[in-house]
Length: 251
Ligand SMILES: C[S@@+](CC[C@H](N)C(=O)[O-])C[C@H]1O[C@@H](n2cnc3c(N)ncnc32)[C@H](O)[C@@H]1O
Image (cartoon, rainbow, N blue to C red; front, top):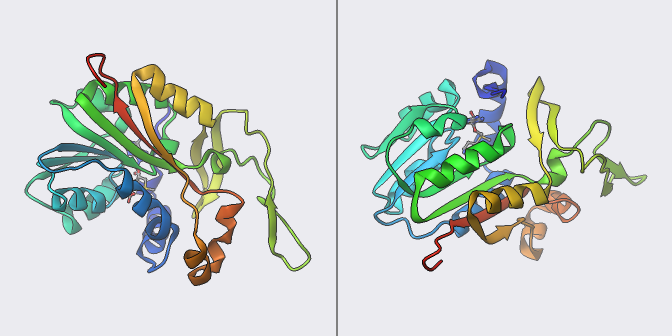
């Protein structure tokens, strides 16, 4: 199956780096707090971060008491930043597409992936391999673009009123899964759309129990401080799930 490495494209990489460096962005306000709220106690745990990017989460997991963190990513450019800016004696950064994680040695207590699964065509294969790599009671926590975003199928995303304010999201082809091409810093960025049911059932079929899901939304205080994020009330940007490896002898 196809594996895209768009983060090694110079123009894409620079554009992405700039938005992540902004003082305010949707990651900092919504996605990261939700992701961290789903993490189990990391003290003494072995953690695998799939699509670790700049390694910021890997460093955080070590500071939260993890015993060891393995961060893997398909992009050499992202890993170069991780090794420079978020190095730690107990973090190992590995240049590897997550589709190949069956090659990793050892077991992990926690697998985490932040905003990378929507780049993966073989989601089911990756989830099955994660299940195998987790020890008894292991936990998977991930975020991805919300399926209401990944199903975008061309044209304007929003219907607006006469003042240009967003009234509602234009939605089409939610039920058609698979590859979607979009423009984000560069042309031809490939993401994969899957319905909520497919995402949840893929986890269940692999043997996971779903423990919690979050679609982060702004509260009243947040809307007052950042009114531009009112859009999220029409359409959440992110979907986050915590799932646990099912254990017949007492989940
Ligand atoms: C949006 S960035 C998120 C980076 C990091 N997890 C974070 O939240 O800051 C997505 C990352 O996933 C990586 N990625 C995309 N497809 C991948 C694949 N098939 N295997 C491993 N990493 C992948 C990209 O190279 C990029 O570093």
